[in-house]
Amino acid sequence: MSYQPRIVAFAGSTRENSYNKRLAAIAAKGASETGADVKLIDLRDFPMPLFDQDLEAREGKNESAKQFKKLLVDCDGILISSPEYNGSISGVLKNSIDWATRADEGDLPGFSPAFRGKVVSIMSASPGGLGGLRGLVHLRAILGGLGCIMLPTQTAVSSAHEAFDDAGNLKNEKQQQQILDQGRELSTFIAQLNKMDF
Image (cartoon, rainbow, N blue to C red; front, side, top):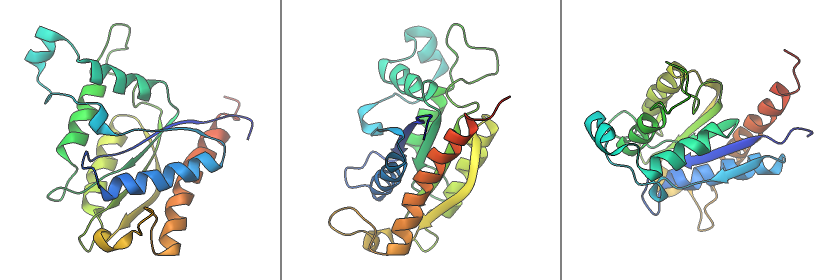
């Protein structure tokens, strides 16, 4: 692979033993195996207050929000494993997205450099029978609306409380390969995109 894709991978959960953190790690491994430069991050390391425009006006963007946005601006692709909270995405994930879309000096009006043109692959894990699928519908709509290139492949792992072994891998070998393949697909697509002569 001549072009080395730059990918940021994370889960939309801050829980220490999050199923989605395990899923994101598997997909990140798949992307790394193709030669991508993958940064696997934890949203717990980027604490942000609930977005409040008055707070932003008084104090500006907090340091964690700045660092998170910069990671996204500097990458080619994003890999997100999203838990489902009450049929939608988690509050911490939505809040992180909201902060990352806030314009800085030099940003074009209505253009979010953290998301527009980024290639994105999404997945989920949930103890429920649908595996977090309803939340992925909302996440796809949000990121698509921000101008992301959304890859069609997605995986929802149901019964997540029983799905992983002690090493953090999926017990179901087919599912394990699906998640690894999603990471590989993201990296390969970005590399191919960068070969195209526009």
